[in-house]
Every structure is written in structure tokens, then in C-alpha cells.
Image (cartoon, rainbow, N blue to C red; front, side):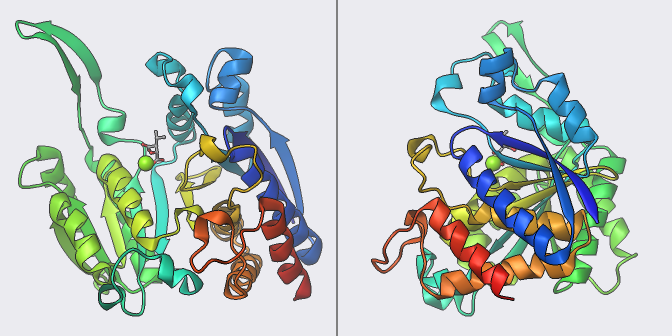
Length: 359
Ligand code: IPM
Ligand code: MG
């Protein structure tokens, strides 16, 4: 089969990790007889430097007309003082909105070979955990009305958290469907003891649970969820939550895996291209040094093969190759646990390619 992929390498370590992932993809193409065509476009700080804006129209256009988008990471200190609408983050938010990427899937699991990197005690983690955060991505406070108005207390800034029934329904549907494919347990996280938007959220999720009798549904306030994730992560299967709560909880969950350089993500639309990116940021401190861990981006490519192209075997091949390389003790500097020697981005990529080639 033939697929057209928009490549947004981004800033910092973005270009390094995306280049690795493209090498892996090309090898998968060779082995399984697919053709991946790439169109590279700019977004984030690099786009600002070249065009004076973080998300040029051409980038939106190319992404919209592709089968999927692979994104590295955007941002860096040199762009921190730009006005809000020129900041690199605007590129991500703009792409989410323009492509209608309302469903963000963020797996947080403990990699067997990296168990010792987990900062939680073994009694707590036991046999490990495997959580999927389903985060609403194009609504809520991120995209609600915002502004600053003059009041007698000086300027007062506001950002509105608003959710429509339609928005809640479509993300809840993804949550239930993901739970059906996994351990059939869905935890919906809200703040319905305080927020009206959360009360609607909870009502809609409850109504929908009738369509999924096999899925065990529970609700949790977000403050408690933040605690439970640390206290007993094994209790979670799929977490369904809003844009802002999902932003926070997914970072917390990535931290307790001890390997943020390993975690992929997918952002999906009702139709059209999905976007795949590592959970980690642009890591300006190590950019250009050739030492970044490419695995999160490579696993994002595996998610793309699975979710956008329905190529399960190809995705499994990548995941198994990574597993073997880790089990053999190969580590980039971010995942060193027991004084292993740190290998470089290119070395890690070659090792994974070798494993893929072997099968
Ligand atoms: C994320 C990031 C983004 C978000 C930023 C970069 C706008 O933190 O993808 O989690 O807040 O959604
Ligand atoms: Mg975040």
C-alpha cells in the first residue's frame, strides 16, 4: 500500500528523533512492501524564524491533505518572549483545531526492561501498570473564550471552560471503545463537585454507559485522581478526561513510568489525518548533540501504523524490536539505570533496525 505522510520535525530534538522514526518506517516499508511518501513542512519556532508565524498556511494544507502527520516537538527558550499568537505552542494548538484532532490517546505503561526507572515503590507497582489516557483535545478551557477586561481591581483575565454535549459524547465514545479493546474499565475524571461543565460531562458519560454494558465505569474527581495515580496506578485501565485535566494527568502518569522519553501519543479526528508525536518536549538542553532517545517517536509511528493505516503486524514488529533492544540492555542516556553505557540516537536507531531486519 502507499501512504502520504506529512512530516513536521519541529524544534530542539524534534528533527533528530523524527529522522530516526522515518528510517524505521522506511525499513518497515521495504520489509512489508509499502510505500511511504513524505512531505516535510515547518511548524513551531523553526516556522516562526523562517516565515514569522508558527503555523504557516502551507503546513496546515499539507497536513490536511496527508494520510497522517508525524510531529517531533516544538518550542525552545529563544521563543519564550514572543506574544501568545506567535509562540511555538500555537502551532500545536492550531494543528489540533484545524485537523479536528479531538481525541488524544496517551498510553502510560511500565516497560518491563525499565522497571527500575519507575520512581514508585515495588509494593505499589507490583507487576506493573498500563494506563491509557483519553484526553479531549479541541475543547474546554484551551479553546474557550478568553480575554482581559478592566475592573476596579485592575485588569482581570479569564479563560472559559465550556463543553457541549456533542463534544463530550464523541470523546466518551472513544473512551468506551478503547476500554472495550482493553480491560473494559473506564474511569471518567472530572470536577463535578464544583464545575457545571463537569456535571454535564458526568451526565453524558453516564448516559452513554448504557451502550457499553461490558465496560465497568467509575467517576473520580481530578484532585483524587492525581493522588490515586500515585497511590495505586494499577487500578486504572482507561482514563477519560477533559483537555486541561488530561494535560496534567498525562504528565503525571508519564513521570511515574520513569521513562518519558519512551512514550508515544496519537491525536485522532472523526475523519482525515491523525497526528502522532512523542509525549516529551523539544528538550533544548540536549538538542543537536545526537543523544536524544528516539523510541517515543518510533512508538508513535507504530501507533500511526495501527490507528491510521490498520497495519497491526507492522506495528507489532516495531514494538517487539524495541522490546528486544531494551531487554538486551541498550540505553540512551535518559533511560540509564544501572550504569549501562549510554548509546547515541543513531546507535539506538540502528539496533532497532537490525531487530526489525532479523524477522
Ligand atoms: C501537551 C502540551 C501542550 C498542551 C502545549 C505544548 C500546548 O503540554 O501536548 O500536553 O498543553 O496540550
Ligand atoms: Mg502537556
